[in-house]
Image 1 (cartoon, rainbow, N blue to C red):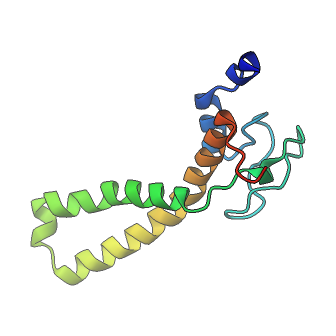
Image 2 (cartoon, helix red, strand yellow):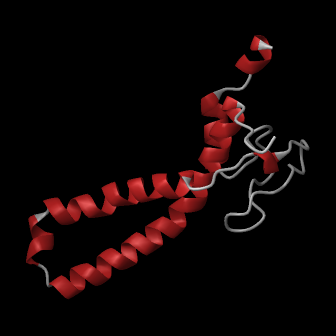
Length: 123
């Protein structure tokens, strides 16, 4: 049992999920829609529907976007001298766009990590 457990590399699953591929084989797509994980891999048949991500990807996406976009607003002098309306519009648009782009990537990494750690919450 331990030898079988060691064959699943955390970083391999994380990297495959990050790229939107099945964490088990790395060949087929992980998502059938924007955030909808396919029930089973079409390439290897692995049951991907058992991995529940719930609010984890959203939390990490907010954490990443907050550090990438809000830190410059607080630290850069140039941002403080710009008109507030312009900063607000740019910041809101940036947060929305970055969140929508990062959420599937983070969810894929989350599913890949669950695969590697054998976290099968639905099983």
